[in-house]
Image (tube, rainbow, N blue to C red; front, side, top):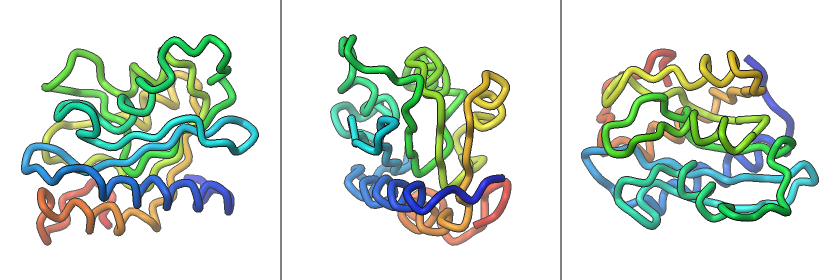
Length: 161
């Protein structure tokens, strides 16, 4: 597990703050995502439920870049408050597949997906596919607090908060 750089922490905190815009729902987590190019410029942001109740944060951010042939995402980083999903009931493609299809080379996250809605293995799936995954788990408690509407006070995560 890598602790990330100062810039990683700054962008991840911004993604966590962005997740607060997600409409609270008992059926999904509030997640924020920011895609940043290799020069440190934000290309797109997204949060759960931003444009559609079933859109995840990563999906919403990637949708904003659709059709942009001028972008090279193989050197981009996505900062996401929670582990990208590998299982979805609401849409056909999980976020890990969307990130791999887009060519995102690096993912920085704060909290692995709790075992509430699905058994997710996004970190392992991305790493097996050659994506550099950085976990800054010390910020995970912020994500858990924002998601108290579904997580409640109990510790339901694999790695704890």
